[in-house]
Image (tube, rainbow, N blue to C red; front, side):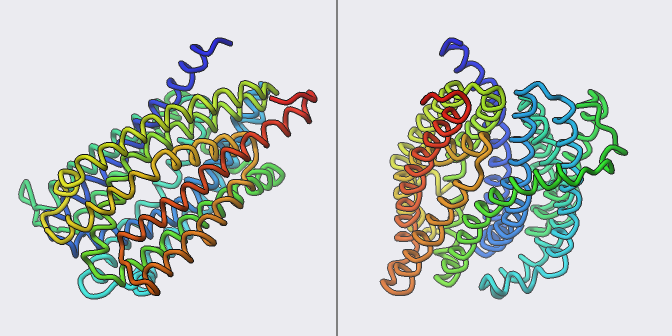
Amino acid sequence: MSIKKEIKEILILALPAVGEMFLYMIVWIIDTMMVGQYGGKDCVSAVGLSSEIVYTFSNIFISMGLAVSITSFIARKLGAEDCDAAKAYSINGIFIGIFIAIPVAVLLFIFPHRILLIAGAQGNVLSMGTDFIRIVSIGIVFSIIMNILNAILRAHENTKTPMIVAAIVIFVNILLDWILIFGKLGFPPLGVKGSAIATMIAQITGFIFILFYYKRFKVLSIKITDIFKIKMKIIADIIKLAIPASLQEAAFDISRLISIFMIMRLGTVSFAANQITTTIESTSIMPGWGFAIAATIMAGRMVGAKSYKSAKRYTNIAAIFAVAIMSTMSILFLTIPHLLMRAFIKDADVIAVGILCLMIASIEQPFMAIGIVYGGGLKGSGNTITPFIISTISSWFIRLPLMYLVIYVLKLGVVAVWLVTAIQWSFEGCMMYIYFRKEINKLAIKGDGSFV
C-alpha cells in the first residue's frame, strides 16, 4: 500500500474524530466563558471543579476504559473478517455500559456535597458545585451509553457520525447555555444551574439521535432485545481488556483530581487561572486524541489482519500529524497568552497567573502528542497493560510527589505545577513510543518471525 493511501486513510478517520473532540472542547470553552462572564472566578471554580469530578468518573469507567476495549476488539474482529464476533462484542459492550452507567449516576446524584467537601470546596463554590453535579448526573447515563455506541461506530471506521452527534450536542448545549445562564427569551438567569441544565438536556438529545441512527441504518442489525443476549466469555474478554485501560485513566485522572484538590487550597485566583489554562490547553489536546483514535482503529485492524508493518506505519503517520498540530498550538501559547486568557475572564490577577501557566504548557505539547497517539496504538494492538503501567508511574511517582514538593514544601504556587506536568508528559511520551515499537515487534515475531 502506498504512503499516500495510508495518509489518506488516517486523515479520513482522524479528521472527523478531531472535529468531534474539538466540538466538545468548544462547548467546554464557551461554557467556561459564559459562567466566567456571568459570575467571575467563583462560578468558574464551581463549574470547573464539578466538571472535573463528573468527567473523571465518566472517563475512568467508560470513555478511556470500556469504549477503548470495545473499539479494539471489534476493530480486530473486523480486520479478521469475523462480523458475527464483531456483533457479539458490540451487544455485550452495550450491556456492560448500561450496567455501569446507572450506579455511577446514582453515586454522583446522592453524594455531590460530600465529594466536593473532600475536594476542598467551600462557600459559593461548594453550594453551586453541588447543584451542578446533581443536575448533570441525570444526563450522564445517556452520555455514557452514547459513548459506547460511538465507540462501536469508530471500530467500523465510521468517525463521521460521532462527529455529527457531537455537533448536535454542542449546538443544543451552547444555545441553552446562552438562554439559561443569562436569562434570555423570558427565562430567569440561572447561572451555574443553567449551565448544568443545558449540559443535561444536550446529553439526552445526543443519545436520542444516536439511537435513531442505529435504528435507521441497522448498524450490525443490532436490536434492543439483542442487548440481553449476554455471553459471559465475551463480557470477560471485554472487561479483561477494559480494566487496564480504565486503571490507566484512573491513574491519570485521580492523580489529576488530587492535583486539583491541592491547587484549590492555593485560593480561587490560582484555581481559576489553572482551570482556564487547562481549558485552553485542551484545544491543543483534542487533535492528539483524534489521531490517537485513528491509531487505535488502524492498529487494531492491521493486527487483526496480521499486517504488523502497516500497524506501525499507520501509527507513525498519526503521531506525525498530532505532533505537528500540537506544536503549532505551542507557538500560540507563547505568542498570544494574554489574548487567550482575556477571552475567559476579566480578573487581572487571574490573567497574570494564567499567562505564565500557559507559556509553560507550551513545552509539553509535542510530548503529549507522542504519548497519546502511541498509547492509542498500543491499545489498538490489544495491549492495555503497558499504557496503564506507564501512566501510573508518570502520574503517581512523578506528578504527585513533585506537585507536593512545589506546593507544600517549596511553596512555589500554581505556575510551578505546570512545570511538573511538562516533566510528566516528557517521560510518558518517550515511554509510550518505546513500548509501542517493542509491542509491534513482539507481535511480528510471534506471527511471522520478522522484525518490523
